[in-house]
Length: 520
Image 1 (cartoon, rainbow, N blue to C red):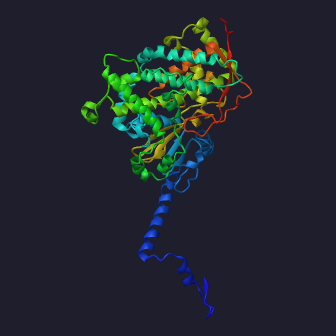
Image 2 (tube, rainbow, N blue to C red; image 1 turned 135 degrees about the horizontal axis):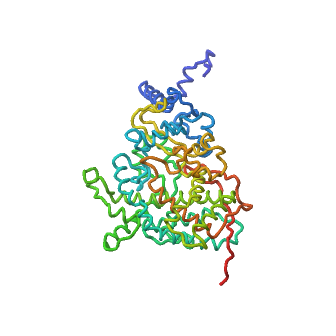
Image 3 (cartoon, rainbow, N blue to C red; image 1 turned 60 degrees about the vertical axis):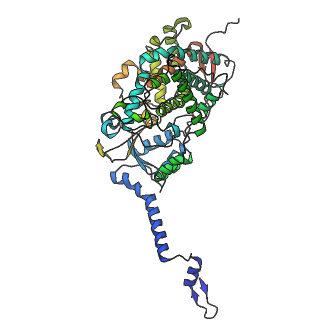
């Protein structure tokens, strides 16, 4: 606003024009059009659940409801469950997601409607060299890879590898023995080393020693690889999915790319060495995949119903190594805390162990798999602390399930932590009660209320393998030690905000020998 010195009149036009850029009318039109489109882009997807009558947290323009994860996935799901009921809607950026703990809907999504409605997960491309893993595979590629991998996890194959598993469990016991005089130990560190070593042995017949040689270059790379939810690449993809092709061409990755490439190159050298020495056959997962290797040119042909390409083999090997490490180590750490804070349950489990393997007899596969109370304890710990917090399936065609309309392109998410803590399904869900899984209660358990490894055709393919590794570690450790709380033990545990359940602080426990150590 300017004042004319001669006339004293105020000239607003001159003031306005002097402070605005001198753009042409066409330029102003383009700018205003772009601004309107940009605003529309930020708001447009977020009216879906209001139209469908599904309640949920209020979305923010562009970002949707992703900020609810600031307090952690588990806590966010529990709060939504308590506030909105058994079905609610969220927006992961622009992707609309129906979340449900309704077991009837869960059954349809995971099993009855798997074909053709819910075959795939969300399309997520930024795993770098791991893009071809089973987790990311879709449709026929997923079926082919799954079919090729399934024999690796048969009971017969696990029996063949049980001796290797036991060698690593023996190493775990020896390492814990050296720390029995400590007032407190970070128990997850021991189980993490066990997981890395046993996976190295069973996946590629590699003898690592994470306990005594943590600086081993392979061990270091495996331990460095973690999914980072705050990765800018991930956030850009969520908010502006149209940038996905550019981000992919820029070779961005949610995992540390240098570490992933190192492991892929290392494994490729192992494969090349085995191809030169075909007369030497290893009993491990990598050999099983090599035997089913498929030429890249045959992918998509009638000859490619089974088998994997070299890239796919490398993806499965690395992903199973890093994924298995987290699931095994975290699950065992949570279980140890459950036992330390519930000594009666630990004593009952030790009694079963002593009965099945008297005088610390060597653990055998057949007897291990017949231990009833061990099953109950492991299941109850996985119920309280499921490591995989979400199971997701992408809806390929609009469908109505139980009166709920799920439009094409909508993601259905099963919040496992909230499901496992539903008081209607699990009375007093915060209490550790292995008897929930006793034979007398089996008839009353809803099979879709307990999903630590998913369900249906796309459940965790390594479920049996992971379970054997955890049971073996628990039995051999409890043959020799008891867990006890100490001053540094956190009760209750504070959970972190990771997509894979963990704790904010280390799980500190005291490891107490059950029998006096004999001096030599």
